[in-house]
Image 1 (tube, rainbow, N blue to C red):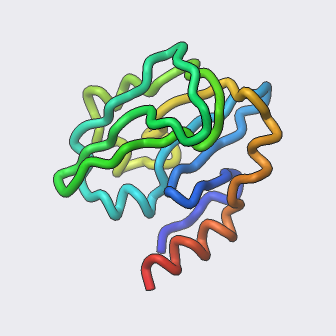
Image 2: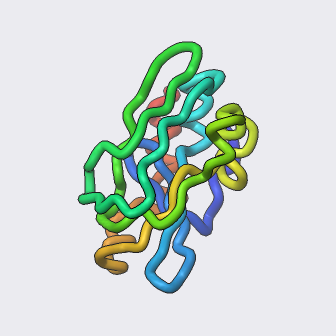
Length: 131
């Protein structure tokens, strides 16, 4: 299994969330998720300025195998999207935790980060799915 960065938070649906400070976070899908998807060929990004509630569908990620909806792990406003993914969606496969991020949110409630999984809890979840 790949390394799971300890500085990030995670969801059971395989998104990662990086606390950028100042009430903003960066979102992406985990290495486990991109491996399961296979070669990513398209990423539908949310609109900047869109308000999301926890659980809202905000985009789609398509691979040669399947299309998966992306769900907001936290409530907030989309303040930036990774436009590089429009021309190079494979970046999600090549660099899921660095260059393959999907969007940045200004959180409605910063304490919501506390309910997300830490790296250890996520590693157990991902391993259980592999077994």
